[in-house]
Length: 115
Image 1 (cartoon, one colour):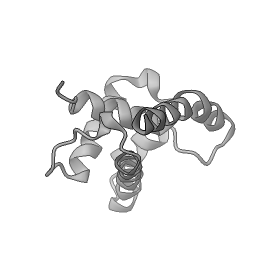
Image 2 (cartoon, rainbow, N blue to C red; image 1 turned 135 degrees about the horizontal axis):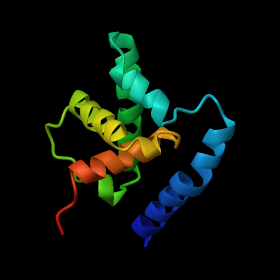
Image 3 (cartoon, helix red, strand yellow; image 1 turned 30 degrees about the vertical axis):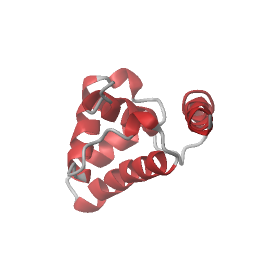
């Protein structure tokens, strides 16, 4: 019950609340900003994007969000950055959304949980 509740709250926040806040808050990272960071030639810019992804994964693991628990051990942060950057490049229709949506969709697509 607790796992179901946590996942539901996380999804509601991601899909309903966060995009509305992002549209009003220029300080939240959207897909455009995340793509720019991950594509940045400077290591500092790239590290900002990778840190954003790592924070989302840490939160998902802490909250035991099932669909991000299937990332295999040994997958490095820069590999996840490449996956997210390619997802945003391939699906630009999500760029205006808050960055967490692209991160979750990209990693869930790349590392689906086996049923």
